Length: 247
Picture (cartoon, rainbow, N blue to C red):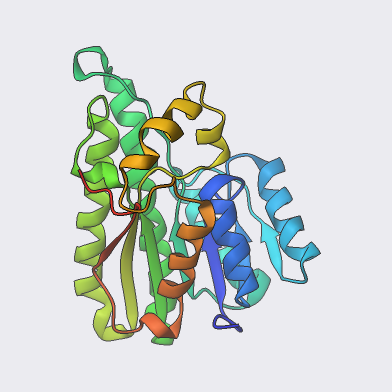
């Protein structure tokens, strides 16, 4: 129960990595504000936490909208009287080669993956600073190193790392840390439902130093660590959860 008495806001928590992170933080004792664009999945995660004996509320909406982000952070304070941990997990891909990528494809990915991270950090951290304790955990990706067909996604995830490093320099003296998690290929429902998933397992997994695809729980465990007092002297870092895959 390393997070007993803490309140966490997790974006994109209706499914996949966000859901696993929300469940793990609740297991560690945190009260969780579950955000997702899909109201039904957000409520589903909140209900799952409650069913396991934890505390959670759903707050669906788009974190690309500044007014909603202000409401989201205010809702955490209203519901639980605190705001201690922020996990910026919401994100999308629109994969195409550069020659086929539209400006709309670029803007949509940068808007959610990077701009929304900025907005959530902007409106969550003042409360953390005022308390002298806080944890910002931003989801990057191994794709920050570059992926063919992902100039928009790779740029957004590299941007998240730059934002996080800068934030760590601004907030460290106030007891607030800011770190990134960069997952590799994780077997979320979105990945396991891909038509080429079996080929992915057969061809990619054996090439990894740890020869399997990641599990959502692998990422959630790192998030729980970074959110805890155990990580109080770690800030500005990017932790790759990729089974050793960097290239």
